[in-house]
Length: 572
Ligand SMILES: Nc1nc2c(c(=O)[nH]1)N[C@H]1C(S)=C(S)[C@@H](COP(=O)(O)OP(=O)(O)OC[C@H]3O[C@@H](n4cnc5c(=O)[nH]c(N)nc54)[C@H](O)[C@@H]3O)O[C@H]1N2
Ligand SMILES: Nc1nc2c(c(=O)[nH]1)N[C@H]1C(S)=C(S)[C@@H](COP(=O)(O)OP(=O)(O)OC[C@H]3O[C@@H](n4cnc5c(=O)[nH]c(N)nc54)[C@H](O)[C@@H]3O)O[C@H]1N2
Ligand SMILES: [Mo]
Image 1 (tube, rainbow, N blue to C red):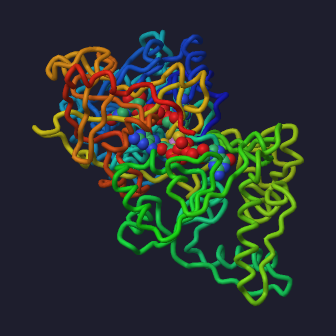
Image 2: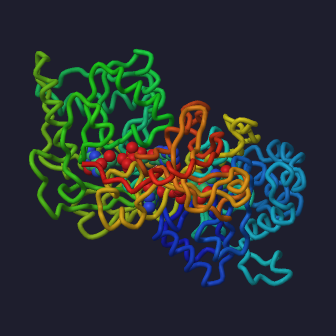
């Protein structure tokens, strides 16, 4: 996030885009509700009704996969009505003129035709957001200065798409055109998912960067890491050469496994058999590996396919840091002992590293005494974490960038300038989803989360009180689509895509719009990812289009209905 969670409550206008915040980010959702109680304008942009729509001044419901047009329509309205922040554009950005010219075609009417949201709503949303107007703003408040603070919160509804990167750039354009960034309670804020996904990226779990977002392709960066690691690894300071080109992203690795270019894989804390798109393809790829290691806290669907399973200690059993969505690094302490032979992940990695070293002439020293010592190396090698130590974290979580031991951490980014200096406008244009609907598969499948379960389910489905709340797989279906297929509320139904079929319970109503089916992906007995596709990855991030696949809906004969989505015993 450019800004912080605590700033949300003081925003004047909040755009929640493609995020089921109430279920997936309950704590942040409280902050949004708190802001609306203080008079903030909440605008939800989501095809589905979500719990926050109850508090929203406007709920814009674009047809799935079409909201890029809506943002271009908003940008057009902002330029046409002069709601832009000319001073911000002049002093902080480059390339506005060319960018604005490309917007001419996207009048609110054109945008409305493309996404199905009424033109007046597009203009209204643009006005509230651009000027940071509160809900009860009076006529004439348009001219009040300084403008209020507007913030964008976005989720997987726009990133898990074949053009997710373009969509995020479009939101950045919105923030720059209106100067709604670089101040308190503004910004472009991704609600990051897993508890430490931010920390994982920060530590270089990406194919193109070392820890602290330092580029693999940069020779100076490589030399710095090579020197530090060579010193640590052998007393004689052996030379280390680090690879020069970026590695592969996850789906690229899977494709590599499927066609034999990748023969071995070491997976830590990822249950790809449940969570990656096109589970049939995943299984074929994983089974074709010559050697698979899975480091896990449970014997998941993926671990069951491994040649070697390394038991890891869970968060409750080890110390280390977690970095949350607002860049806040926080210390976790163990409160119970690991079961059996389980060890902390870092300790397992070091033990494996030492054994690799045995085959070399001068053995490697993968000797770290503790997670705190690992953190000291991180601070030495990464400017943005330079001032972060476990000792400091004992009392308070620190938000990076935190370059020195005296630095208090950074509440919000880009106050004076952007990472590259001046912000650059990127002209973007909408692209259709990879797999459009057709006569054979007329409905859009969208997948996501529910409050009581977590991703592939290995943790929450083992927790009886949670599994009891949501024991079975289901699909949200609109009344009209259900009637057409002869499916009734509570009955079993069959959902099929070009990849496979699942049987789930139908929840018929008006949560989803006509033409959209929503299936949570937590249930292994009716795995949504049997239906999704691993094609049409986002060009920039290589993220799969989890939010759009063409499917068809069928009713099941009565005698088979009982079995569909039946409560399933949690995995042993
Ligand atoms: N309880 C619970 N909490 C979780 C998780 C969990 O599994 N369970 N997982 C965590 C993880 S890893 C993540 S990444 C986050 C995800 O958090 P979110 O991104 O908030 O969650 P999703 O369920 O993926 O919701 C995506 C939303 O996008 C909407 N959407 C679908 N298509 C479109 C579209 O075309 N346009 C727009 N504007 N919206 C669209 C859907 O209707 C849905 O409301 O949640 C985290 N928190
Ligand atoms: N259809 C569909 N698919 C999706 C999505 C979607 O919206 N729709 N969302 C996608 C998103 S945003 C995400 S983030 C992915 C999530 O995909 P995964 O990361 O595969 O999902 P999780 O179930 O969270 O898996 C985490 C695994 O880590 C293990 N684990 C927990 N703690 C530890 C630990 O301390 N050490 C080790 N070694 N292991 C541990 C857990 O047992 C679990 O098996 O799913 C993606 N898949
Ligand atoms: Mo995620």
